[in-house]
Image (tube, rainbow, N blue to C red; front, side, top):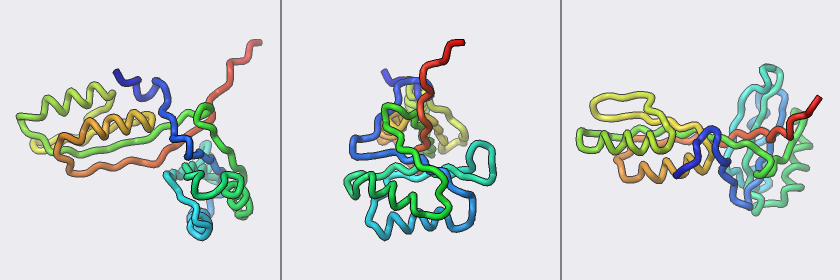
Length: 179
């Protein structure tokens, strides 16, 4: 039985991946400079997600899942820290982070397999967000491992399109303080 995708155990990034949460000034060209730094240095980006941060349009949070085998983590962080618009960098250890990803998939369906698709979607904790006579679009917002499991479960159906976002992550909250 799969863990519930929003509350269950978090999927763990393979040991060679590190999650960097980078707070940057929300200015034109910042993402291009980050991507250029990775390209010039030969660092591999496994996943990348960017959005305005904490309701403040002045800053954005860039979540970068990096392949630590392509370069030492200290070197990656040091190079990022040299960029002018980088405000803060946090290395999120997989055990100390909450990670989520979004998967969208459009599948061809007919009367013969519609029930099977509905069963897979229900078992994964996913939702059908669009439907017509010939296809359904499925959504899952969950751990990377929950998205991996759903993607594998959908392989037996005819895929029209499948898209996954990059990971987003935040540090786990510590134990609640007592007053």
